[in-house]
Length: 380
Image (cartoon, rainbow, N blue to C red; front, side):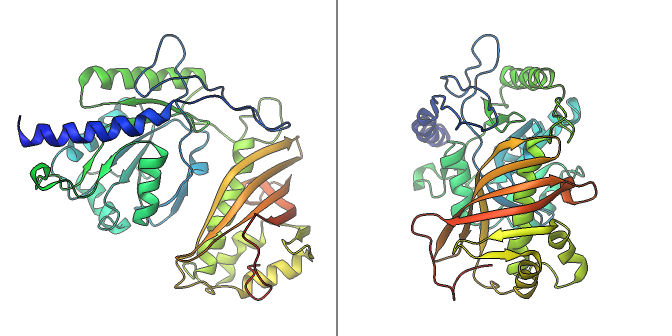
């Protein structure tokens, strides 16, 4: 057996061990939560008969695009998307995967494509941008994502259940592909559910992927949702969840100093708060709008050098009407040495012209277990 066959045999064994964990069992939502697609038992690659199975949920993530913009899972809600996993120094499968994804977008206009590097230590946003230019990829909706190696590894291996072997045994190493990784495409629906895994270099699998993408488009009225998707006239739950994530992306960039300390940059935060905005902070103190605005404005750059990441998890719409929306979520502040979380609930009200046409009216935060800090350490 050739060394290359042995290498891919090892990768297949690693992948089978990971994919075996992807058998999913449906879990009921809490009372009052917005309905989510029912899950069924299945394994990657099995579309069964009739409707596509739900093989799990795409993982929560916060990664950086080739443009420098932070992208999260919530940003992709409302769209059908296909992900692949490549790296720019790869001379083996990656050029073929990129070419296939390029072809797929040509054949299915409007499809969102996501390429996640498996070599994040080398593949910076600038390197990924050069890689995209080398393939004449000028579609800004095709995201090329990178981030800290531990975070990327978690998204790919723990989230999508696909293997990465950073340092294969000597006899299995190959100069064209020093990192072994999966060559499967992953199909994700508008609700963030994984609907299929495809070995797209196989022509039959590629055709199956195209059929399944079209099926999702037909089932959901197209591959992209608009803010007015709520057919009952209520506020769109996807937009409510998106606003939670987008404001916290601003806060991460503001506190780390990646945004300039200007009125124009700060307007993203200030314009999101209603005139009567109030915050109950984790210590139980009631703060008004002026106090919160002043504290955040004065905190510009205070976490520079700390490798601060603010991530949102478990964002769930609990109630919505034509004028208001209630969302609960976990907010985690991660640095190289700490990870602290808050359980938060926000009441949005509709206002045209506000970011995502939503204003933050009331926010209530409570420390998650093990996260409480002293007053001197507490973030605003």
